[in-house]
Length: 133
Image (cartoon, rainbow, N blue to C red; front, side):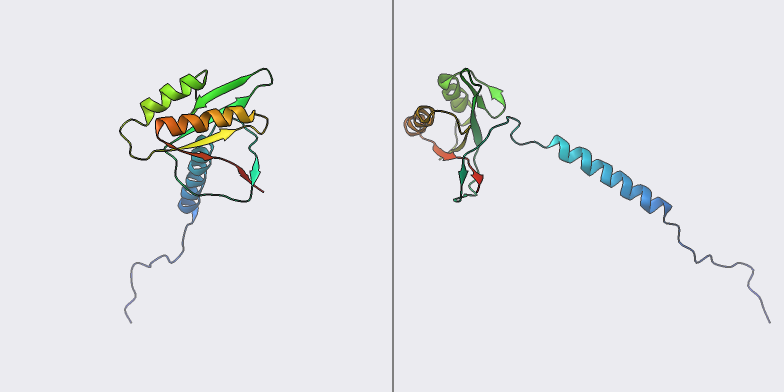
């Protein structure tokens, strides 16, 4: 009878697989902490009507207690006129642009109406952002 000189090892080592899974988990944890679409902390009003329209940019009005802070994306622009100038720059050349308005619950309705007027005169669609009920 002829015997084989070499035997095939049938065992499986999962050490390299666990290393890969650990690295993938670490990458995903780091990547998800870096993704923050709206870094401005706002308490949005609640609504049961949620739209899924995609806005080209966002405008945020934050109540500081002693006044308001105005942002386009995460850049502070100082006033409603600053918002108008920043939006003209960002929305230039776009057809039927959409802007998402994020306001604190405590922001006066006058500020929202001013943004609605701006949207009408400057020709963009305004969506009021709310949190789900």
